[in-house]
Length: 167
Image: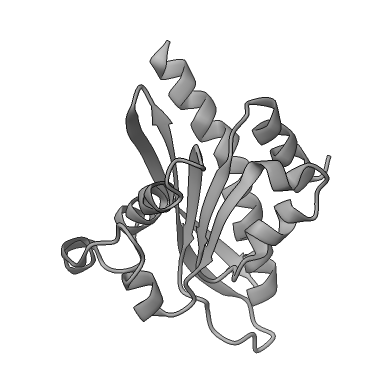
């Protein structure tokens, strides 16, 4: 099954609305979802922060966290996801952040890059978030596609784990 179709179905079946923050995927995650029937009802906010300055200026991202963990870290991804939820002013119920360096220009030789993900949602009146760092290798555009897929597939895994813990 098409991953984006699967995720739109997942969001719709649970009445979830998504906010997203992307760096090197440059909006690919939101675009993948927007292509699917029913997507408008489950998408709220999409933000692309392709430069380091834009990422540092995102709502929720603190200078103290940048100083402590670096700009491309799980901590920043979590702050970005939580900030996206706050910025959506209650319209979104779940958020994802996909944070990493855009990567080197593809010279025909594959590269390896670390990429940070975070997912956040509301549970019991509180924001709950989780993150992970994953290594990807290959050519730049292959990596970007893999990052988008990983971000989307992590969403139901995260939400289902939060729901399971709440029971």
